[in-house]
Image (cartoon, rainbow over all chains, first blue to last red; front, side, top):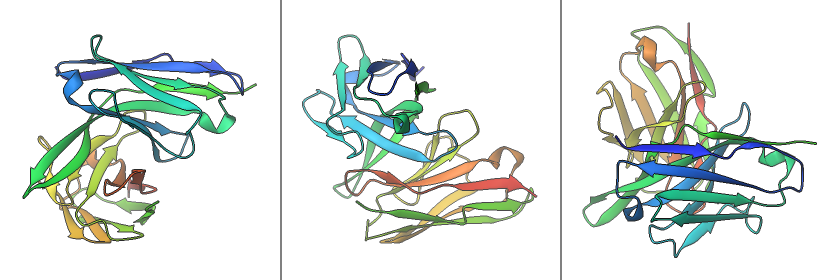
Length: 125
Length: 107
């Protein structure tokens, strides 16, 4: 069964750090780019970051650039998000999501087809 | 950044109703538009990709259409399990952006 399971969430003070993880199973992890998407309480979805299958390319939302670092260990089938200088507004459920694609007449269409259950990060004093 | 605007933000409908949700992009995104369904306390699920392609396992009562800046998600006959929040997402450029969501509630 294809599955993503996040862990590592918790309560942290403003300015603190936290690392969340996402364990993948049931598919060839290294063949897929992976994303982090977050959802603040009662709010919509916000894309946070993406990493290529080999880990060589990373992308970030402006709201987290310079503070968060995405990485992966393909030998362990695990995705990470290191979050530093945390702010109250980073409070959210953090989901990892697999990036898949379909080719239509030489055009690649990307989508997030597998999502984890989420891990909650609360930034509060 | 490309802004995605959904309307309405919420709607009330009855089982069996035809429901239409609209998503508008701030610039042309061709067909790089996906739709997700999210139920309370759970992760989003992919419904439609490339504006109109039905994801595997998704019931055929769901359909998507549109190109450029204007897109539509239609549920042809609303079922009890369809009461949820729906999000559009553009994948034309980074940063990926989502619409604000449309909550479909029971009338």
